[in-house]
Length: 357
Image (cartoon, rainbow, N blue to C red; front, side, top):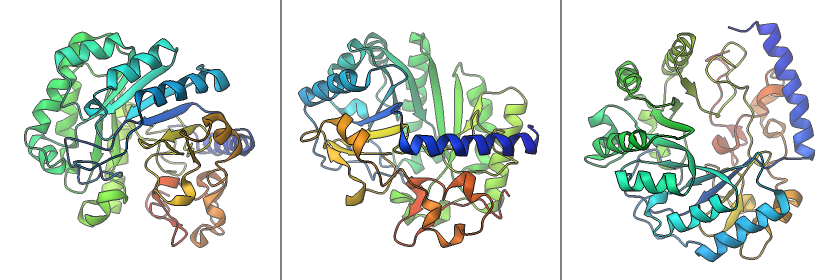
């Protein structure tokens, strides 16, 4: 465990660095939401994906977007993050990703894994996929219930095995959303994943966004949170590739203990997203309010939007939150993450003050 004084010094350095990013952001992660359609109906889905109609960009529009991004901003230090919905439901998926690969973009994807046959895994290799994160949200019965998909666990696990058989990826990751219902299964899940040749296991808490708002019984209790973070920290001390996600400031006891970096909400600073209809925003998990749509690639050049707009995201949320006034940690958390902020009540929905620090 790092010395608290060292952590405080590093967090202060990061705060100064962030002030520079507010003035001069650097695009590193560009999310492409290919569709809102999904073959699962996950209880926690922040975008409420499923059997829903969604306006989708044409292949030619993605081609133009990617060429413009390369011309204006380059491809170095950038990652295209392909997502949905379930991106593999997009029939032009391989056409779009092959273009990205040929233009020199590194790209990865998030998927529920159920559609990754051996042939699909080989095709993903052919079009240059580097990383992938597959969702496994509990043991078989729990996973299928949470994702409202009978047989979903078996198909996802087979998808992972198909990827591992093809091999050669930079990172095959499993992501688990921890709820009050499945938190007791972490040890069993670790035993399963430890026997597989995956590269990392990302353990994240269910967030009070999207469909999860209708299931408060699944939100973690303070004791659940403490158990989850201790679980992750202890595994990492043992040298296991387990990590927490990017969300939320954790206080000096847990910062850098459960992930390799200090907390920084990168929405609008490193991260931008293209919704399936072409709308430009920061993080796809942020509430889809009109003021957060910064433009649309059908009428705007992306680099112009990135460089000259996004002011909604280049500020401190803690300036608006009464509960943050006078908090000595506000300089580090800055009101926490945009995706879990309540913009009507001007407060973070998730705050670990009083729980972790």
